[in-house]
Length: 158
Image (cartoon, rainbow, N blue to C red):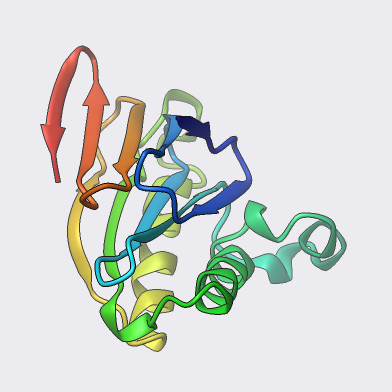
């Protein structure tokens, strides 16, 4: 079954028949986490790097931000039996979108934030598709942990 991860959203599943998917990864970042030992996966689609810029919004929706979203996702996966030391981590997005050019550089800031957060949690990036100027779609197949990226009609594994 396809489970859609919306913008500022995250999902976790342990059903090997499921595929997690998130669309429209422009300057946003999609993070796919997978524990191969128990075949549980999670996906986060966050918009902004740091929840401290609006703590009220972060309380209402922690998945809007890299820091609060990742902590919430890791906590939920751990609660369901995942071991953070086994997690395979793949990321996509961080594009330089048209209205973001050289002003806010949200894509670059989002990428820098996730690298720091993962490092602080002892997680390493096992694959990535970052930057550029095109939106992406990210798929995580729960049967084997494969992550596929679609962008402008091209499909590639990461």
